[in-house]
Image 1 (cartoon, helix red, strand yellow):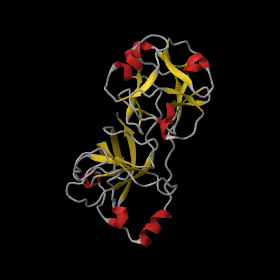
Image 2 (spheres, helix red, strand yellow):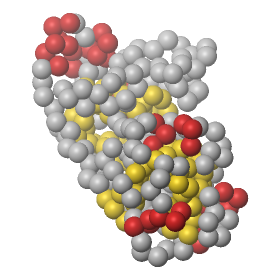
Image 3 (cartoon, helix red, strand yellow):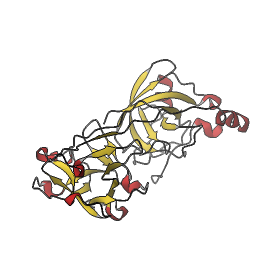
Image 4 (cartoon, helix red, strand yellow):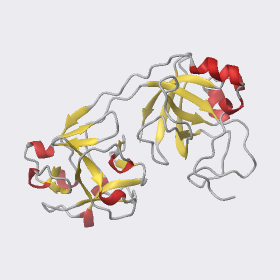
Length: 272
């Protein structure tokens, strides 16, 4: 079976219309993550830097000696952006390919401007599922920054001010799946594994392989799951949905595998 853009068929899909309407009227407000500002240091202790402190669209982003200027002050936004000098860190031409250079650009809300700062010190563009990377592993001033397949190398490790996580949101569960179904990452789906899909409600979406600590607010039970799929549900104010869990993980957190009660309120912490 070919991999699909999304595997998910959650318990909510089978919920009767009246129950869905009732759920949509139940308010649940996600606490926003707090933005954080500071330098982003990487290879050889040097800083992520806007070349020449330029503010024009297309200004290169590079590695440079840390100097405390505004060209090296980056805000990790709750919306998934990394901003400096009033503009966003942007992958050139919306590319998702290895070697695509990054630049400063007017913030557009596009997927090429979304980044996840992980506990493993990676900065990942989820749309490309690639890491922020110093070209050719060069530590020279002016070395261009690009995206590249995540390798764990020193040229992809960064110390950045991370947003504060722990927001409340809904976690749902898949429900029955056909034998041999594949997740969006290409893995064979296991409905008892500690895995999950990151939902479209969670921006930016988490890259495959990310580990997330999920805690059920109602009972305090906690579980670490690995992201290996993509969700299908768009965010609404009534349904700030962040994860779709396997039935096994959902049950271990105390969730009821019932089409009319197919969600739990959780907090999530990205571990990397």
